[in-house]
Length: 287
Image (cartoon, rainbow, N blue to C red; front, side, top):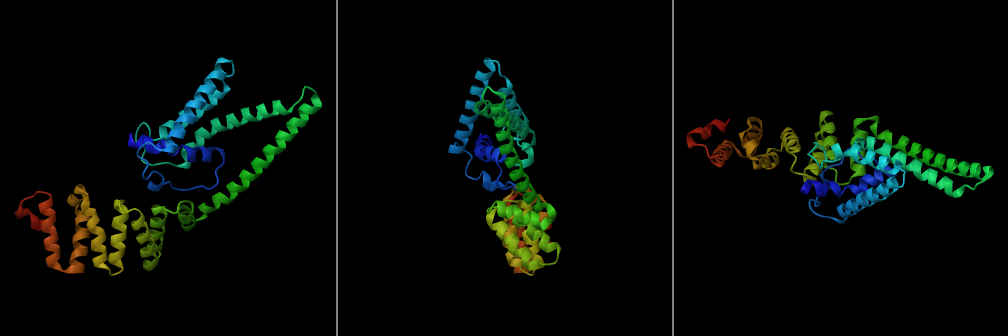
């Protein structure tokens, strides 16, 4: 239920992307659904809009025009498998999941265009062709505008840093864009910049396990074991990671380097006790 409400709250965003995307985002992260695990105004508007569209399309179908309901069905069925409503898909949302649904939107645009043409056209041939010319000119303007917007938008894919900066520009709360910028800086040997980006990402979303690992490892590389221990300690909040040798070793190693062997031994005993294991086995965690 929480997942369904969260995804329904993205309805206005999805509609905007289908009709007139103003800014593309390579990654839609947790900030888009934060605090939306229950009924929201956006979710309610999404439900009302879908129900209203279905009712109107069904009425047109009863009148003999089944094109609107075919376009609407194309949109809903194409997006449903990636909507997270049926089951988690592994991603919150991605623009590429709208490719199939955009076909239905194109069908609706064609219907609206035809309706507009019928309204502005008269019964005479001259006025009919004049109306077609007017609608055609408007369509060309829209196509040219969107083509220019697309050309500008795809420039973000010219390099990894440009793509990561686009994530941050499209979503000021994007922790993943900052995380990837930090990893990119670390791969180039710029540990200072890496720590700055990773620190911002960690502050925005400290619940990503791999981010916690990358940030604590980078702190260790930069000679900040105490700060690394404080970050790596968060890994121990997940019971399953307390049994993962790599995660435990990262935490205890940072504690030992930052506070000394006695502190690492004490931390190892605490971990064993938190897992409910006998005291005799606790020393196995200590390097």
